[in-house]
Length: 240
Image 1: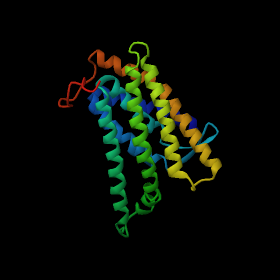
Image 2: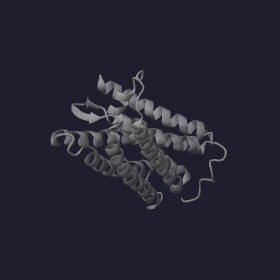
Image 3: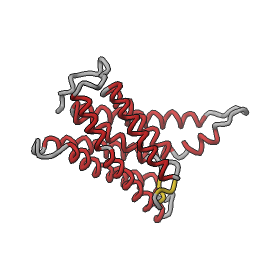
Image 4: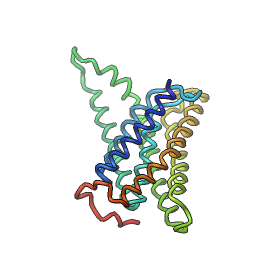
């Protein structure tokens, strides 16, 4: 059943990010980036069995953050992608600080949430550190690599190439950094290896399946089907 739920989760994530883009343009993508980072860092605390491997949740929603920055790079320029990365980093940092402060409060006798919050967010400092470092390094690389592919021999590389090639390497960087910092010493080496392998493979699958989404996003954009929010800032040509 987990595999079925995973496919449903995949479709749901793509539907949500594309819906946000269609309704609000680049602002919709700016909204999605912190959603993907925050949700992924909560879901990652849950281990599941997928396709015969032990894996953490959060891989799908986190990987869609790369799709968001790739769409921004393709349609609005790399400066807009860097803004999205900065927003995601600030959102994760803010959530970590605020939730750690929340745990310091002494719960009332009627409280039913403290124990559950402690189980999830007591892990957060280490996971957040891992995610902050992995997120910043991998996403900055992704924006840089996508733009490099876009500029390299224009017309001779296609959208799917720059979307997938930049993302594959970036996700490998992200997986190595995150798993090492977050889980080294927490799990046995066998489990650690399975988590790293499954995390990267699942992100890779998401990257392959998000290719139609970036083509659809470009089609909507070129046909004027995207409802840009007034005041989004700039013409979108700067930084290309």
